[in-house]
Length: 184
Image 1 (tube, rainbow, N blue to C red):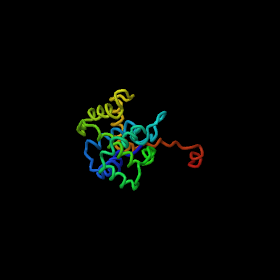
Image 2 (cartoon, rainbow, N blue to C red):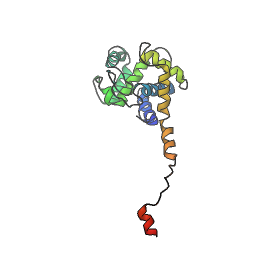
Image 3 (tube, helix red, strand yellow):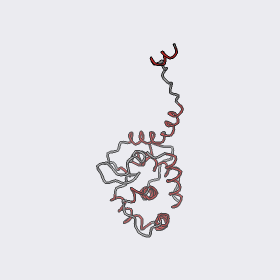
Image 4 (tube, rainbow, N blue to C red):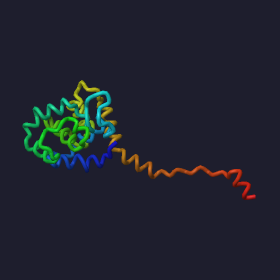
């Protein structure tokens, strides 16, 4: 599983800054999407399916973005390709191997939707938005599961800190027979 803060600070924000599309709402929506789709980066290929990367984008969606939406967004397209240091359309497999590219494409996917993003602190609204547009009404995701996975992912650091601060009591040592004999 990826670290929630590293995902935000080292991947999402820098990538979305490159294409001038960062906002608290966009960041939170991508964190939520990653948290649910790949369980925070645990799976980079869908088990029993075709979806790829930490956001689990399907190759067909990737192709639609490139064929229909991206040609209308030449500035973002140029910035993505420049950042990726490629001069061609990356294949969908890049979603699996390159978290920056997966992040760009996930943001571009959500950009094509005319409905504004819910507020960044409206987790239920973000989960419903995700369900409606990413997973679709016919998808298997349940909004309650999306919310649970999101909270599990963003709280991982808190849980790790708690585990580190717990003092484990050593069991009382009872003298062995040998140690008892040497004391006599």
